[in-house]
Picture 1 (cartoon, helix red, strand yellow):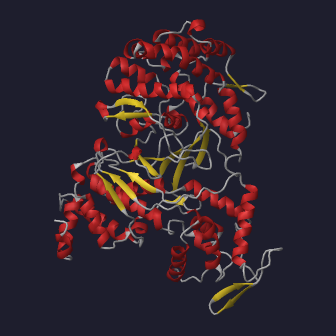
Picture 2 (cartoon, rainbow, N blue to C red):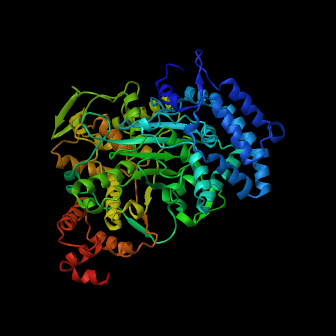
Picture 3 (spheres, helix red, strand yellow):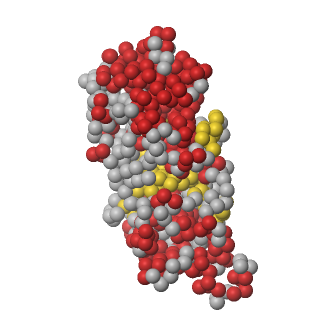
Length: 634
């Protein structure tokens, strides 16, 4: 264990110790204190918020955690919440049933982590380290945690046991719950009380029945330099020249992102520090999401703040609470039974994307570099980086990485032909070379992978007024930027860097049939893909090459984003959103055309040539071109 780089990176931020025998453990005095709590209040005498905090302080002292690393008012907050604010019957149940379960869960944390690391080396995804570690800035990666381990980590947060002295140097957000309790006492607000009710309810639920699923946390990066195997950070000409059609745009003036029924990416209007004010006074979109899905908080332990070219994706969290209100009116509203389906990794099919918008950008948000920053931030979040890695690994293991031009290739009428087949799998009239090759790939995959590739059809993007409100962004421009990013993800096969084209290997006119065979396996819309391959080959002046493993993996990986659903929350600035979106769709605009319009508008805003919103600016500018059509929107 001591030689594991992943454990070494996170160990300074855990309250556990590592023996020379490579096992994790609690110091003996901590074990004694936790066992006492696990036996219940009749043994530990911990039956109030005041006494609970004293027990927590004793454990912290055993771990040599300094007093200055915990809020001075936290003790008063524990006493206020558990001794005064919640009903006596609920408090009695908490101390008699929940606290002992949390103590027992903490006692099992070392063994849970050891089991976790045993499975992390390819046991979940072959060739991918999914172990708990710091997912540092500019380092793409993914961590898989069982819901039980997440519960144990959150119990550490509740008991304020995580060391905090080095977290600032690593750009990590707060993780212990002491500030939340301290603010409750120092600046009492009913919303803070109800945030804690959500947290307490979560612990009550897992104490009565521990969930058996998994949650994944992924750092996603758009590469700023060529040569790294990440998606490149698109420049302005990428967007201005994009000929991708815009995806369907759906609008809802009421409702909430978390309540939508379709399987979709759900956008978290994030702070660059994951969670924002979830563990302090914050209570808007991101913080509320972290209260009703508390497993999100676990990511705050090991995910440093996001850079401009990064996003975070968390898949599989369970929703435990209902709520009403927003900000100061936020209220816990009872238990929520999550009915989301489970994927092949044991995760609930809930994909939450944390993307942070520019904060208080003022007029600079209309600069091209700021438009690029925002659209690329959304693109980074919407792209499925992890699935791309799955397909890449799939093809690499099948022996298609780095293959060279086949000498048995003959040119015939401008096309290429291959005259070999896999040993033991001769080509016949009923099974073409391409189908044989594809079938071999699938057999190799089934033999070596612990789960099938998790193809997802009908995954949209569900979002809203991202970067607006307290962040001060222009809601009309932000809506268009998200639409553009979602559309580019849906249909674009151009996002992969140019080196993918340079890595083209054995070329064959059979490539279309080969792709169709793969499309059949993955239920990919083959006719649309065939059309694209032919069009793109003509545009690039290439024959129909047998694409490189990199490019093929991207084609296979491409998860559909069939729609974007935008919740406007009745924002006045977005009253015309449906009208404008319908008009744009009626014109058949591409991503590039809408982007160029946004740039033109933004230039005029910067120069002071217009002070109107984008919608009002756009429709009059088009009126003379299509007066008849425009009348139906007036």
